[in-house]
Structure formats: C-alpha cells, structure tokens
Length: 140
Image (cartoon, rainbow, N blue to C red; front, side, top):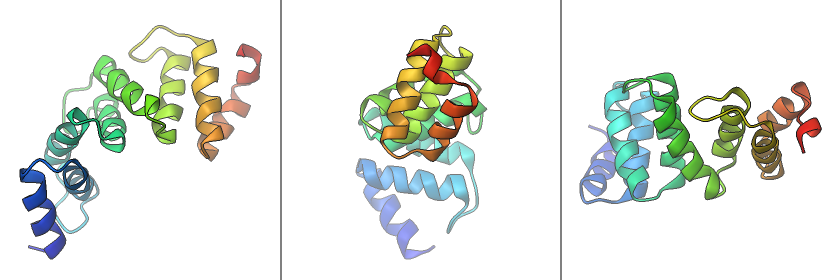
C-alpha cells in the first residue's frame, strides 16, 4: 500500500471530504491502486454529500455515464448543478451541456448559454468551443 493511499484512506474514514475526493480520484484513474469505479463512486458520494464541489461534479459525471453506478441523468444533473453553483467551471460546462440536450432536465437553451458562458469566463476552453460550435450567442 502506498503512503498516499494509506493516509488518504485514514483521513477519508474519519470523514475528511478532501481525502475522500482524492481517494475517489485515485480509484477512478487507477493511480496507485487498481482502477475501481464502484469505490470511486462511493468516495465521491461521501465527499459530495459534505458539499465538496469537485466531488459533486465528478459524481454527477459518473451518474451520467453509468460508471460505478446505474446511469441516472436526473441524479447526474442534480450533482453537477450543485457543483456549478459553487463555481466549478467543469461542472458549469457540463450543466450547460445538460440544458442544451435536456439530459436530466428540460431543454433550456437560455440556461445552456448562461452556464456555458459562465464556464468560459472561469477559464474552460471546452466551454468556449461548445459555445462557438453551437452558436449559443443566439440564446442570450
């Protein structure tokens, strides 16, 4: 067992959200551990419930993709929305895309434009590409 895994696990078991997030990331990417999306989901959820934005965004993506859990767009939308409201630019981009396609919500191009533009303002180049490709300026 690596030192990082040892200490993250020890802190995660004591309820430390950042450690839970880091442990989930290790399991999701297979960094220092065998890749295990079920464990990644478990630890992201623990941190997300405590309000940790990056964990909320990653948990939402796992719900959208069905990795480590059963695919559920509504739960994915909920968690991505929670992270986006806290300023996570990746979650903001994902929320805008969700509104654009109606994944877990009703299609709302105005909301899509708002969240994609917000993500871009926070530095997401992917959001800028999506904005341009889909001409979201038309929905402002």
